[in-house]
Image (cartoon, rainbow, N blue to C red; front, side, top):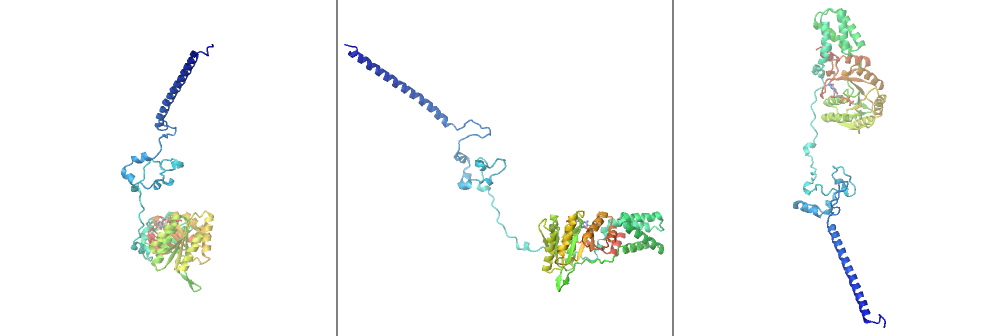
Length: 454
Ligand SMILES: Nc1nc2c(ncn2[C@@H]2O[C@H](COP(=O)(O)OP(=O)(O)OP(=O)(O)O)[C@@H](O)[C@H]2O)c(=O)[nH]1
């Protein structure tokens, strides 16, 4: 009989199998318990905010998403007034761009922690109210001082020239017999007052002749001689009337067309406005053409002048062709049947040849529909010899028919009047004696000399 055949062998085998089974089961149970512990720790981490304690380099804190918590923090009254969700979304263009942040992606929206707009903050536009009927009524027209006798009324404005020129001459001539030194002083006085060499020589010769021929004993007699000589020096063959009244062409009324030209700043726009006032005061209807498209404010300035007297203005866009504006103004004047069209032209430096060509073009274009009746050259009396040089250039380009000498109130060199007229052979028609609307006077030699001598 072998060991296998014995019962004790099988009892030992069964016992070993059972023991191994118990051991394996125990090991499995122990492993399962260890995994459960690890899972609970992970779950604990999972409950912490993602990225909690982590700060990115750009300063962006990683925090749980969602908007519910933020909304709960707002006051109840604000919450109640929150608009519907779609209205609450701020369009990109609504983002207040004060922080320099880019408006891209999520960042294009207003940050949710920024100040919220509420209904209370929204300002509704005020409904547009109709202007009261009386406001639409035209401004009452200004009273315009009569043009006649203006030079006498404004004579005080020539005070600077009077003391420098008139009073000095009277002092010299009224002193009795004049020696060569005294005559030299007379000459110097005339030159300083801007009469120019040729005019000065001519006046001194005339004075010497007259004083030698007559017996002058009193200062009143000396004044009379001086008055006579100076007035005669200012006489001209050209007539001083400004051609600003309408005339008839082929049986139809045609407005007078007046071009006002000159270097910038001489007072063209002001003179155009002042002249319009004179014409309106005398019963004429006027259209003003704002052909100074170079200086933007010039058209506004002219418009203001026009509104004050109830005249119409034709203006173009800034930088428009001045010739086109002048053409339109004259056309408007003809169509409306007015008495005069005054065209204020651009006044830029005469040294720019192209600009002088432009002035010539303005005249040519205007003359396609109406003759230019008057070309007034505006000269600033305070600029002396430079003003005269300007005048020469202008008269080569356009036929100047009259001179307006402005700012005579601000200069001691009123003698420029004599020189301008002599050198250009064109009469001084108007003088500007101030910035006021009625400070434009017709030029009358006798009254002018009277004002100079005091
Ligand atoms: N004191 C004085 N100032 C004047 C007279 N005429 C014009 N002015 C002033 O001169 C300045 C220039 O006048 P404007 O009429 O604008 O001159 P403008 O020639 O049209 O000038 P631009 O449009 O630049 O070409 C303004 O301040 C006027 O008030 C005058 O007779 N006396």
